[in-house]
Image (cartoon, rainbow, N blue to C red; front, top):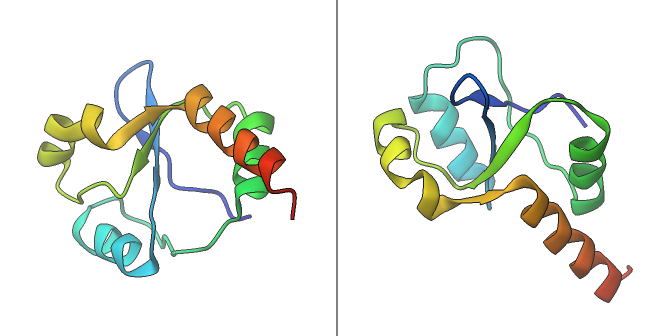
Length: 100
């Protein structure tokens, strides 16, 4: 897994954007100004949970399909996000239910 884009949200919180499709992720990168050479990549559930557990990235929130406009994102954060631990527990639960 490549290093994911983690967005500094405040002095004590960072968010990890996750997208349901490549087109949404590309649109986010095109319209957000993060600089650098960020690329869209795919990660499976196990890989994502592993990264969240083994890193000390300080990720507090997982943001699902966030809008690229940071002002809109601020207003919508609670609507499009889930706390890291809740997200990880839900993925682990679904992996245990379907161990493929």
